[in-house]
Image (cartoon, rainbow, N blue to C red; front, side):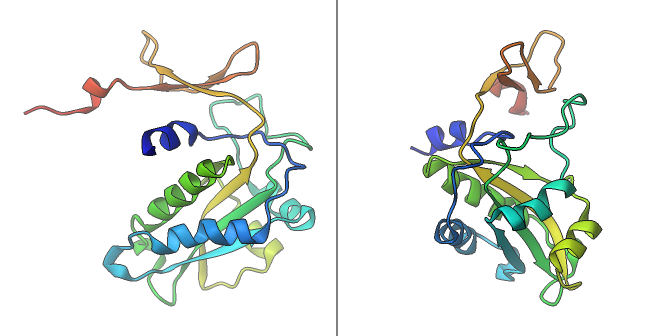
Length: 192
């Protein structure tokens, strides 16, 4: 059921790094994005897949992992993603500033597909783009839009109501469980 997939589709940041994700699985996830909606049906997105330790080691250092957890600098060795899908905007098809909502639609389709396969991930927009471009030899006409980190989750993520102080900041408790506060449904529906 879609509701169950959405609840399972959390931002996981720690993985069982030894759990490999093969290229065919990554291709299948990208195929979900390919079949998804695209503004004006331009289909300007391209996808760079990495799933080897050597390739992944080139991606990992260029990512920011959890802005609200200032003390935590990302997953340790053994907890890192076993694959990445880098979403690129092909500026020969559409100007970078006009990619619109396509990256979000594609990323959500991929992540829901990953959840369906028992995988998890994190959509990362905090990217050192110039350094990543250089390390992976990404041609200049591809704009780096998002990096999707993928793997078998090695942490628990719990959804909860906003606390009394209204803070939306996710946090980890003393048992290292990741908590994600969500606004109430009645709070986000506007009635006129």
